[in-house]
Image 1 (cartoon, rainbow, N blue to C red):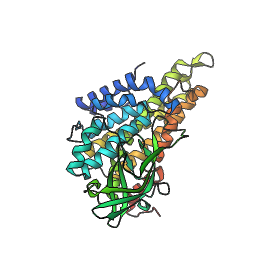
Image 2 (image 1 turned 180 degrees about the horizontal axis):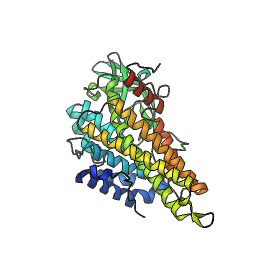
Image 3 (image 1 turned 60 degrees about the horizontal axis):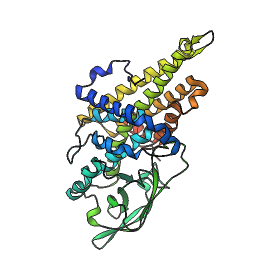
Image 4 (image 1 turned 90 degrees about the vertical axis):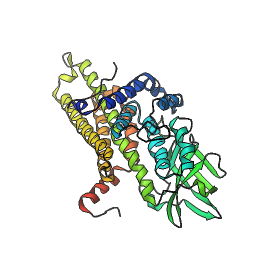
Length: 388
């Protein structure tokens, strides 16, 4: 049965015709093209590269950016795209999110005209893939402790360091790499094939198996000054990119939660047990469905208001922390409750629930852990940072 969405509180009445069209188009793509292959992709640990041209043609890469071929959609339209893609799989949503929010956005916001003209059209068209190099083996939640260094050498730079847990790393033709310099943290555009720059994939993942995750190594990588992002000043520039990505995550996980809920809802209505009664007729089952319906609705309202605020330029990083933290935790609990309702069948790959659950464990950690976002919110309401 085609996915009909979840709208207990008539939130659709708050969406524009353009927003509904974007959601409908992306939902159709997920139903027709992504869902038929994602089960085998996850099992095989393979990203569906064959879908990149189609996603590009739909304008999914950098959808909320302006110029250079980008679709220039509203923030809510972009959020609905993330929702539908993650209904298919978190790993595929990560690909789209990294391409737009972590590669195209910093190029547009901080890059030179030469960098924008060279890379943005190619990235938007899916002809080039990008990655974002910030996290390091020793420093995940504390990017201020990065060890990667960029040292001036004549008119250029020499970079040394290592990045890890990099989505799209070995696929990328271009990497946005952040390094510490004497003037502070700066961003650099590093092209594949640059001497001393290599990428190697991380294997053995039990989560995000349909996503390519890599480590990046930089050994005496020499770059001209034109490779530096001229507008990137300090760690706040890198964190601004993460805010773009976290916004998309807050929307995306709604799709995973809705898919788990709908799978469980249909299952307990059809499944007969105890005097040939449907599981859905039992109070404990309905309690779980009611909890999921309520929490998904609250997450939808939070995401929609965040989208409206972002379009008005009023969405703050702490708002995004609440969106990401709340919605990821909610989606993960929906996956766990849905697995419980399916019993033993819940662990089978015939159903999407276990895949969503495993993926969401990663989504809870990356782009700022649950604990880090808790402290961001805590600082916002007290004025006192408590990170150390």
